[in-house]
Length: 203
Image (cartoon, rainbow, N blue to C red; front, side, top):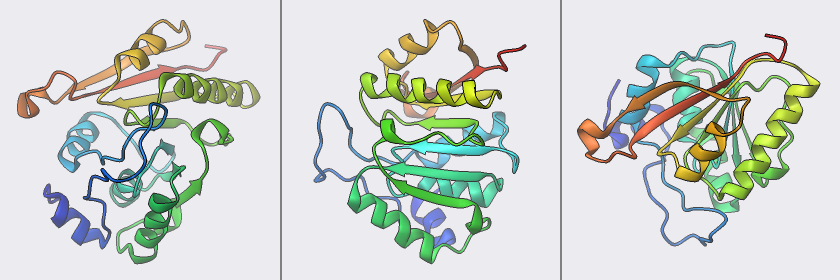
């Protein structure tokens, strides 16, 4: 698969390459920046996702992860985006998308902390989209969903913020399952994926 973002976008007939600097930024919600395709390729060399999964991407931006996963692996993928401009870009990309698994892609416009976690969702992806306070609330919502429908879940962090890591590693229910380092080509120790797992409560 092509690693150039422009070529990959062209292949799927979507547009996800621009980093949006002009969109309103705050201490609560962070700017849009898509996960590099090369980083996604590296992650999914070691981390299994298949058609049985339901992945939720919080702060999905223009939907790059959603289209990438649907095309390569065929899981159900839901992108959560609070920004109207990005949400409309997701819908435009979906209307033009030429890859596989179009019927498995959904987008919802809402605040992450107000999103109701569906009972099917079992993988949750975060590329440092918002503050630790919102992250705590989202995790709380995930745990509430598990109380209603017990199932194993995993949280995937890209370029993980230290306070996100501290929270998960000091939350007794989560354990680190996988770390994928990318610093050998980015020369940045923060360029990594961390995958945390939460098993069935009965286990």
